[in-house]
Length: 120
Image 1 (cartoon, rainbow, N blue to C red):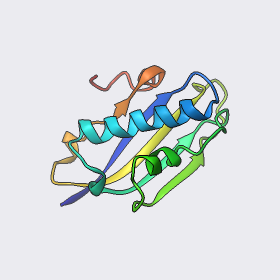
Image 2 (cartoon, rainbow, N blue to C red):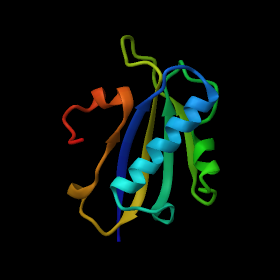
Image 3 (cartoon, rainbow, N blue to C red):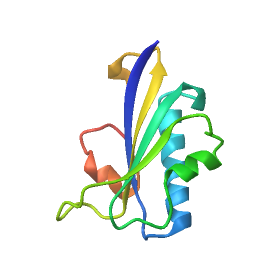
């Protein structure tokens, strides 16, 4: 079984607790679904938020999904001038039998504009 890394991002409309939780849940579910993974395949997940998002920890959404036995970490993205605002990102380390080329990174909502090179 190989260890792979899966990236993802999404954008919310406002620094609102429920929007952060809902968008993070949607993103994590999409990452798992598109890569045929279950929460048992997760090794760890690093969540980041742009500095304009402070209403909730994105990792709390994963805990609400029942992911309670996986190390989770939240961090702030660097505040780059002109960067897309209100973005939540994740980097999930997973166990999967598939090759690296089969990993499907997930960019939702406005964050899809960050990776126009990826298939939808």
